[in-house]
Amino acid sequence: MEWTRKDLLSLYDLSAEEITFLLDTAAEFKKVNERNVKKVPALRGKTVVNFFVEPSTRTRVSFELAEQRLSADIVNMQAQVSSLKKGETLLDTVRNIEALQVDLVVMRHSATGAQDFIAKHLKCGVVNAGDGAHEHPTQALLDLFTIREKRGDFKGMNVTILGDILHSRVARSNMWGLLKLGANVTLAGPSTLVPKEFESVGVRVCHDLKEAVRNADVVNILRIQHERQTAGFFPSTGEYAKFFGINEETLKYMKKDALIMHPGPINRDVELSTGVADGPQSVILEQVTNGLAVRMAVLFLVAGCVKK
Ligand code: CP
Image (tube, rainbow, N blue to C red; front, side, top):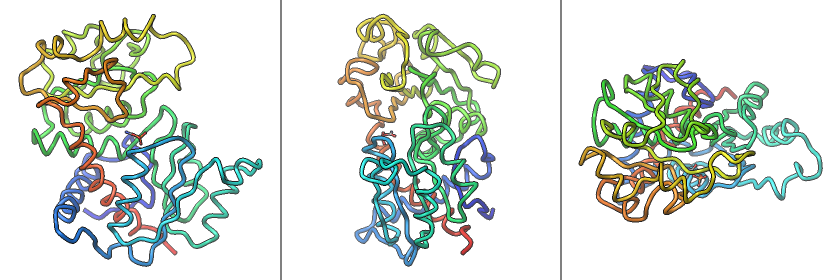
């Protein structure tokens, strides 16, 4: 197929064919990352601005490294020392960036829809590196890549996403991607963090940990997102860990070969014990490794659609 989008904003927007094409392209870039010389000239002469208006370790470093491996010129912008602090609007800020003949803006923002908004106003490409509790498309793509690499075809696969679903952009992007590729998706956690309303999009909602993980081929465990919670959604982190934490005891309810995933950062011994996070079923660091290839694929494909 031919890639036709200058922006990557969500997995909700993409077809199964587009997602598969992205994963196949990432598989080629993974081979580049395993060579002695890990650099290709695919984005030589292109300029990418990384604009993170919210903290990040994995996504920011992974995008920057992906851009370097593609030979792009890179500018890293920090919101705290930008003119946003002087009252400039987000749109004025990004229009000024574009006026410098930039090809791509990779942005993380705490406001849902911020990237969709700027993409409508810019000719350059926009890549969503996470917007509020809405979407984190490259995280979901690297999760899908890792699952496909380990387990093959998604059709009929049981994937449980466990934790703070309400506040999670990772859950939403994963859910759309998995459903489009034919997986059975269970969203699990306390009823305050996993509303029944999600069932209307074709997922199973489960508030009992044992039941949620029993038949899972993959359990993707999410961080409790204290920074986005405006109310007490559960009595204490200790209580959460007791009823919904994955540890050596709760691992016994699962299939022996179920994959344990987590997008990071981990609250160790809250949603996931150290023993399981670092244990043989965990693919958490492989997710990070695959993220580099996935972001190279995304940057390569969207850059090819930016009209100058
Ligand atoms: N998974 C993820 O988005 O991590 P960062 O917030 O560190 O980028």
